[in-house]
Length: 137
Image (cartoon, rainbow, N blue to C red; front, top):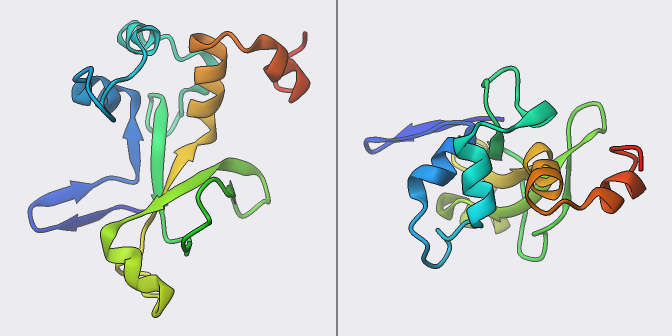
């Protein structure tokens, strides 16, 4: 995971649940479910909070190289463990279809902990969590 500073902007390796609340406008891509906003404001993260960043991670940046059609692909860490889903590359990374440069190519992934948190705390998808082996039924 990586971040970057450029042109007065700082991109940290993780976006967080608090950032989701800060961007909430109830419009378009900034319209999070009310129940999610309520749970975040209550800091009801359960076991899904990251001990390293001390909050619930939503997305993370990496130097993984993706191309069109890779959205939704599993992201694995160095131990082969599922840690998220790739869903977009940064604007600068569009060139990676022709030339990969880890200094500018960043991919955005939704963090697996956020996916599980949404299933658990917001959607009450207990049967799916049990089927996946995350929780006993």
